[in-house]
Image (cartoon, rainbow, N blue to C red; front, side, top):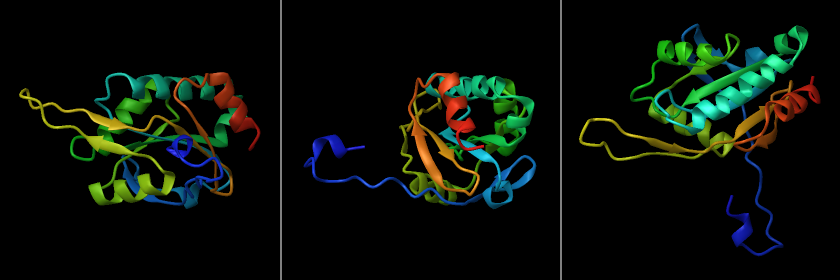
Length: 172
């Protein structure tokens, strides 16, 4: 992310990605069990007022653009960066609002930090407001993982659903 501020000869390495197991409403979500599928991974949280709904809606639009056979070989996963408030059940309801084929996962604070580091995702819980609420600033990329489990692309906020679907189709 900070590569633009450094010496042009400096190459900023891409994050490695990697497998993970996190709790979901259907039990442990293990990415190794999803081999053969293209994964769209997004880090966000249920109470996000703006960035998450836009990104998740774009992912849902991409899933709707895919044929039923392509959708069967694709999964979109939202990983919560707010394990203090989000539960597997809350995530299931949240992502189902956008698309019934989306999955939600939330781990402990430690597990979340580990998986976020693997993908180069950042997040920071803001101080609690007087009303008890708080925001979590977070990365807004959607991470594209190929059928062999390799992180191959990061799509920025505002990527149109058609471009997301095209990125998936290249890997199917």
